[in-house]
Image (tube, rainbow, N blue to C red; front, top):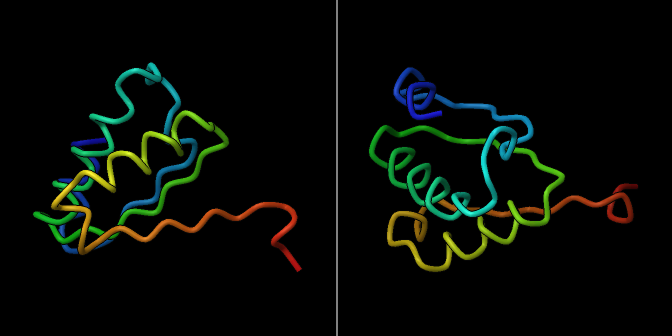
Length: 83
């Protein structure tokens, strides 16, 4: 993911099933890294997941991150919220 972010400098990065291949215990650290690199490299990141652990780690990392303060927007779309 780090290399993909660097290659997406001044652009955007789409990540499907963000948590695949990652142990749940490292998700918080990975999100913090994503926030920092996205801000530094001017990359807009779109990530999808079905993992509650991944969403929880995202929320925790975004609330405790100076990098995420200006750049994070979390929108959870559920089946109930669709028209």
